[in-house]
Length: 198
Image (cartoon, helix red, strand yellow):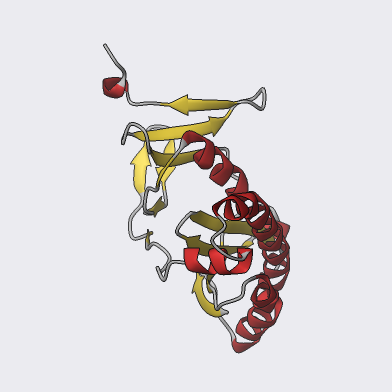
């Protein structure tokens, strides 16, 4: 495992680093080849003391991203929670692509997943400035590549990430779309108006 650890608004001690390396070493058994894993630990100002520390793990692949973010009352607790979350997401990822791999008959699942790993770094997060909006503040900006994929794959990626929306480039139309989870548990798709036929 190729683990990169960063900290924001907290100190990354040797003890925390050692604990994270040991706790996330479980990911080594999930992949045949070394996997780039990025862990960010940060402390946020919140009234709930048991949610002040956030551990965020990102594994970026050609077919999407495995990402988990969990909170705890200490960096250690947050790392424990996110390790469990990411392990479950990897299992879902393998299940989703194992049938496709068998259909393609291109080799074993472990090899197929290893080939999907991209040697990309985690996208930089701009936290240098805070913008005041009418109803609050814009405090964080994330940049990430927009993958070209089908609506079905985008919905599956949204589920794997545990999000309720997902931005992607529609493979059929080449337009930027947003798939989202509706309150009735079905999906919705947001399409730019200028891309609709007349």
